[in-house]
Amino acid sequence: MKKEREKLWNTLSLETKILLAVTLMILTLFASNVFIYLQTNKIAVRMDTAYASNVDLSKLSEALTNVQEDLRDYVSTKSSDSLESYYRSEQSYRSFLERLNDKPIDQPVKLLEKNVRAMSDTYLKFAEEAVQAKRGRNVERYKATYERTQALYKYINRRISELNDQQFRNNTSSYQTLRNALRYMEIFSLVILIIVMTVGILLLRFIIKDMVTPLTGLARTAELVGQGNFHVKMPESHSEDEIGIVTRTFNQMVGSLDAYVEQVRESVEKEQAHLERELLMENHLKEARLKYLQSQINPHFLFNSLNAGAQLAMMENAEKTCIFLDKMADFFRYNVKKGLEDATIEDEIEAVENYIYIQNVRFAGEIQYEEDIDWAVTGQKMPSMILQPIVENAVRHGIREIGRQGKILLKVQAVEDGVRITVKDNGKGIEKERLAEIMEKKTAAVGDSTGIGLDNVMSRLELYFQKKVITILSDGDNQGTEVILDLPARREES
Image 1 (cartoon, rainbow, N blue to C red):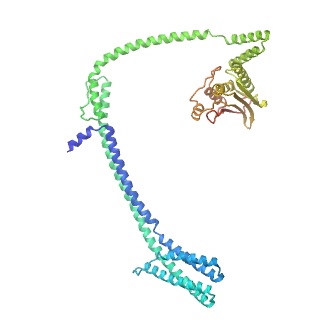
Image 2 (cartoon, one colour; image 1 turned 90 degrees about the vertical axis):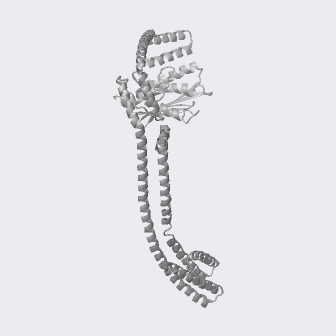
Image 3 (cartoon, rainbow, N blue to C red; image 1 turned 60 degrees about the vertical axis):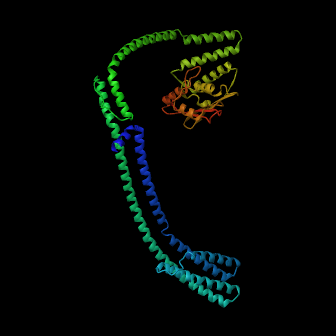
């Protein structure tokens, strides 16, 4: 029988073995917790109801007081409201009386309950007589009857108080017993959980050891093979799980490894020759790229050519072409000249104006550009090539191809601790996930003209001002985008 169980266990996969062990442990813990919960809940319910009888007696005393007060009000005023209130109080009091014992039982508490119930019946009888005498205008009778109800009211109240005290003592004793039982249940629960956890850990340790022992031997053997010893093998395993399959496969691999070594060596030599050819091709490619870069137009030659074109357009009375070429020359000159220098806000605004002018000439005036500038603060220094890439990004990714006229607002205003610059468009907007990627610099947006992306802009601003100054806001699809730069005030000497 034992051999059959071992054979069955060896046929199971590692996943099945671990799943069975964990499932067994979880089911055991679940059953233990359910048992503990039911027992604890049972004790808790009994503890909650321990003082219920005291609460009922307090309500009984309160109902009796209401009856007496309503009776006093009626015999004093004889109003219909007080009579109605009396009958309601009487009905409530009778409902509480029905919960008291009315049978002869040889227990002090039950006998006292029977006594209170009997006296209460007498009290209600006299109260009814007083009401009837008051309604019949029999003064002497209702006065005498009312005095009896008062005496019975005081007596019954004392008996209820005495009964409440006895019930409280009994309930206190029961409550203490339940608390002790709950404490013992806690200890019992802890012991059960410790036992279940210990058994579960031992079971898991057995399964893990069954897996780790052959893996440890496999690691040692693999280390010897790695040192060049191809004559070692793992002990034969009859297990059908993953470790047994790996062990048998490893032995087969070691047996045929020597034959593969020569093939690998030849393959490495071929790969080396191939790599040398690739390096030679890469060097030729780099050399070609260098020659290509050396053949590019000199920037100053470009500026001079654009200026010459502008003069030629002026001579031919082509005013718009002249302005366009001037804007182009100014735009590229600013890009080259200010690439590594600081600029003023005014310089950046001028670069944006040139860029917008050029784009409107290219795309027939599709961009509606507006400015709201506080020129008093435009002399402040900031990194160059900041605003134009932001506006370019708004044009490319915001308002281009939106099916309506694109609008861009550039706003510069003084704030308490510096200058706030806002670039707002009415374009496509940005989704929350995409906006988070941009703010975390996980994506880059490359422009048409400058090649400067938003991640570059944000990095340079943080390096320049030593803190984060850019905020991008968007409410989602087709809601537009707003880029806010809060530039701290910088003294000239800094």
